Structure formats: structure tokens, C-alpha cells
Length: 353
Image (cartoon, rainbow, N blue to C red; front, side, top):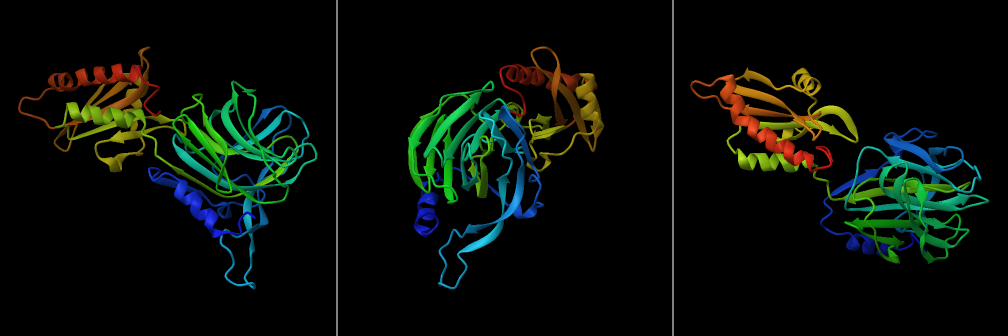
């Protein structure tokens, strides 16, 4: 039976690649019951009314077997639940964590279906690009199966998977591992679908999905992942190889999860994430280079333009002055590097990607 043996937990932990060095745990106890958890957004794929995603209190079996017969085997904890019962056939309520995108990851959650006359389905979404493009792995109690499919430009593909004895009201653990274009799916620590290969979406967000009138719950959610290296960080390393004597270097831009101009990459790693000042914001909006001096340093702040000539980012050079230094020769020191950076940017998907 699920959740009665610590061995199943150990097997799952052994199966997770050690290369996944970061972990995000989702603790719904910090969220107000009856509300969508902070940091999550929701939408409906297909047709029908919006989903009703809430944090609710429910009894969940412990992951660790009780030490004595008198110890509580179930605890009432906050879980994420989809409660609406719109029976529309092609209705897929989705909620997702909006703050992070993941490439290589292991996404694990416990789930159960508690209601639904038309459908009893619970699953996860991953590699979510937007509301029309994402992958799904879901279990069905009425259908007795586990399936993988995806939405591409809003159209659902044919599902693939296996028939399994999924029971309404019973808790299961679902794990999806994505490594490059390879996906592995485990149910209670056991592989249940042959390794899938799909090239549709290299990175994306993660979340949860139900179907039609299914009422489902999710608990003990965690993602182990390899942090994404955005293009700005790669570009910074390449510039520092070309100009190792720079006192400092910052690249400013935006990301899908943070739309304000901020430091994407810097020689001084502690500066990453700093918001832009009026200087950088002015360079971006004006699409013109700025020259300044500060603490025996020369500062040159230049726009980074895309192939259309539009400023999409900002680079800031910190130079050590020399005798006879002028604005003209300071600009001459860095503008060739700026042009090279723009040539690299033109072949990329963006600084924050």
C-alpha cells in the first residue's frame, strides 16, 4: 500500500540524479486557507469555467510509518485543492508556480482524487511556456490509467501511457523527471511509462491540472532542479575572458518572471538582482550611451540592441582611468566589445532566457 513503507521513499531519493543541486519545497501552511497560494496563477485550457484552486485542510497519511500503534498515522495539513465541478468535457483547470522556469528537474507531489462524476483526474503540468503550450502527466481513477500528453498552440495531442489501478480517495506519489528532451514518470517510486522523448519545450514552469468536474488534492510538493544559466551570465563570462582587467561589469535586463530592469549578471556576483538606477533606465529608454566618473573609476553605460536596433538591455563597464584619459578614448576601449555582445545577442533568445 502507498505511504506504508519508508523503503519506497528511499528508492525515489536514490533515483534522483545527484546533478540536480537545487531544491524548491512548496509549503502551503504559509498560505491562507480558501485562497490560491501566493506565487501561483491559474487558467483554463480548453473550454468551461475557471478552476477554483484553494488551500484546504485535510488529513494526509504520514510519509514515515508510525513508531508505535498509538502514534497518529494521519495528520491534518494544508494541501492545494481544485474544488470547482464544471462538467464541461474539454475543460482543464491549471494552476502553476509563476516565479521559476525549469529545464532539467525532478518534480514530485502526492495527489488524490476526491470527487467527480464525469472525470476523476489529477496530474502535473511542466515545461509550461504559456497557457497554450505545456506538457501534462495525469492519473485517472475512472479511466484506470496514467497518461502523458501536451498542449501545443492550444491543441491537445493524443495521450500515451498505461492502464493502472488508480483508486479514488487514495493518496499516490507522482514523480516526473525531465532531463533534456527525455521524460521519466514514476508512480509510488516505480517507473510506469517507458522513457518519453519530446523536443517541444526546452524549459518552462511547473504546476497542477485536473479535468472537467474532478475534485483533486495535492500535497508534499517539491522540485529538485539544475539552475538555469541565462544568456546574460554566459555573455558576461565571455566578455571577462576578452577583457579580464575590467574593474567590474554588469549586464541589465528583464526575465519572464521579473519585468523590471535589474542586474542579470555581474563580475561581482553579489550585485546580481540589484534594481537599475535612473542611469541604466535612461540608457535603455533613450537608446544612448552614458559616460560618467565615480570613485576613481570611469563608468560607461551602453544600450544592448537587438537585430532591429531596439535597446533590449544595458551593459555597464567599470574602467580604471589612465593619464590623459578622455571620454572619446574611454568609449573606444569598450564600444568594440559592445558591438560584439550585440552580435551574440542577435543569435540568442534574449538576455534573460
